[in-house]
Amino acid sequence: MKLLFFLLLVHPPEDSIKARVAALFDAMRKGDSTLIAFQFTNNAQLQSVKEDGKVETLPIGKFAQIISALPAGAADERPHPEVVRIDGPLAVVWAPYQFFYK
Image 1 (cartoon, one colour):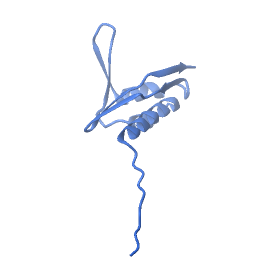
Image 2 (cartoon, rainbow, N blue to C red):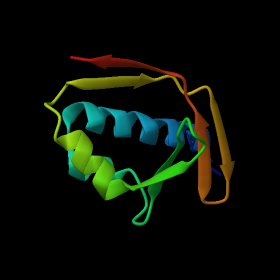
Image 3 (cartoon, rainbow, N blue to C red):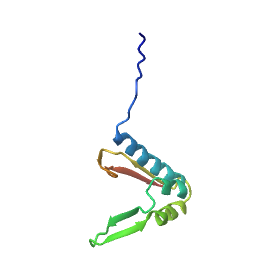
Image 4 (cartoon, rainbow, N blue to C red):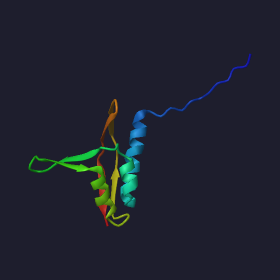
């Protein structure tokens, strides 16, 4: 009897999320609106809290348009994902970052 063994290298889901974050910031550096939008679900939105406490919502398409209007390489954000939490289809990433603007 012959046995065949397979070694499967399975990446933790956190690695997939970190790769998606890296792909997003690479697309932003390139100013590629299509690649930026590809990193999100169809109806995703970005939300930020302003100094006055109001929440600002920005559709991903608009965000991609704003970033792609910059010259390629002008805005270079370098995230350093530290914490990834996954709950079903939702992932939250805590990522301090460095920002360089040319």
